Amino acid sequence: MAYTSTDLTNIETAILALATGTRLVRVVINGKSKEYAQADLKQLEALRNTIKSEVNAAAEKPRFVLTRTSKGL
Image (cartoon, rainbow, N blue to C red; front, side, top):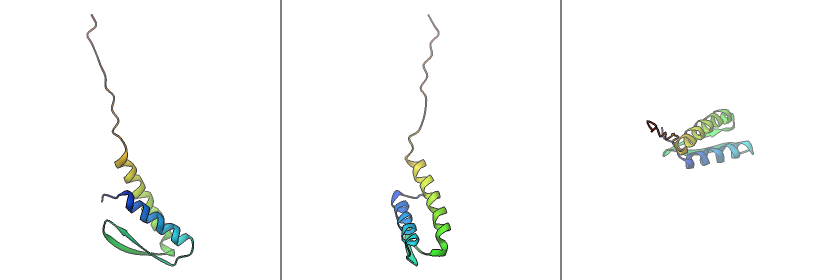
């Protein structure tokens, strides 16, 4: 599943809301809506970590090394 930075922002906002006392939050990820309660905070944090790692991996620049060789004159 391809997550976006918007999904990450939605999850982080929901975690903050639950941590500050909101009993129920609704999160939209990839067009699907799901409700989470305070008891689901650990599950939501695990989902945040997954999304964060996927977003960071997608944004990472490919690494490569160019080498140059010669026969030596």
